[in-house]
Length: 163
Image (cartoon, rainbow, N blue to C red):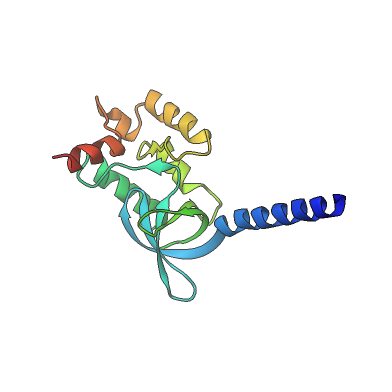
């Protein structure tokens, strides 16, 4: 009986540990376009393009205050460069959800929050560092925090779709 319990436990651990590895994976690619402050398109080495949503952040929408500046900032940071993606999930639109690292290993998602070009997306946030960096940007009134009443993109989207 102990043998069966051990085998069952070992099988359970093996199956679920492999599931974790299947979700999180690393990919190198070249950024070919910037959709907005938290979405890009990347070209893989096999010439296939993938759409990527930056994990843990939410940048202003295009029609929102700072929306264009957020897109421009992301473009200045990574457009037409090689990046490394740490894919953690896929969203409802089929995009890879990833943390993006530049060639020096800098976390671009975190940098967007630091520059005041995105919110820490608390609804999906795993790393509390994003919220700490956001609070620093807020207290220094960097980027979108210069606005007297910045509206989180999630609220902006609700208002847009409810009209």
